[in-house]
Length: 308
Image (cartoon, rainbow, N blue to C red; front, top):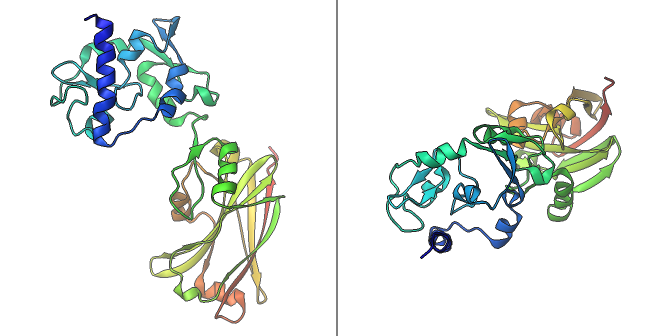
């Protein structure tokens, strides 16, 4: 049988084998993979398409992503990326031989000759990197997708800002408001029963950007508190161009917070745990509410753009 025939047989068998491990790569994922549309440069010579023999050798047969060193192989020479080696329980998905810790040094050396586009090329990144430094760039690429900022439940959706705004509105029923000022009321009939709670996220459209207003109850040590903070739907360097203020009033009292919105690159939990926002102890919050029995917080806010 020709070499080409062997290659086709190996790939076909691998797609059948790794399904036994619960690792599924759908046809849509393969078709939409940015690696399928990228250009590879070898020794500074562009024009070798991504479906070339060199690129196919570096494609993990399980996840179909480009393999980075260390690249492991079974005794029969079938290669696999480090991440998938764990997922298939150290068993070759093609021939079922034990993988062990055999490195494919020859393929790793071939990889060092390649220059590859960023995997987020389809989102707008046009940079090309040496094979060994590409992964480091991708971890901080400004075009990399964002995680869904919704905090009321674990959500695995990622995407660009435009698609996430649609997702928040359609899938999480998030309220969308236009304008840079707002007034919100947070009400709870029996606040002493609330130890960990997240109120509905609200998104504000202003200055051509989107801002997420969060409000929740949790404990700092043994002390129950309420916290409100703002996150910016974009990168940190853009978030720093804005400021915001939050003000809670009631029962003849006023408490004000001013800060800089945090990028949604920082997770909701990261911002909350840093206490970077308006924090009100429960006793004080009930004082603002009036009767001390029911939570009725009125929070006003404003977002503005700093003059550079």
